[in-house]
Image (cartoon, helix red, strand yellow):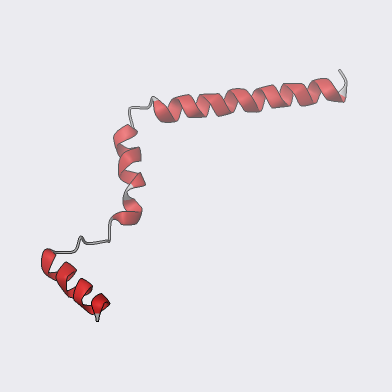
Length: 62
């Protein structure tokens, strides 16, 4: 077995692991928890009320 064969087998192993990971992530029953985790960066932002929106637009126009 030469170095080229070993590198080829290593590449094949990494490819199989990568496709297995993709399959697990997209077909997992944990999709709801993945979606919830994807929204975490936006969790501490509060939506602006219509009054706050009006105050913000007035201060930007002045």
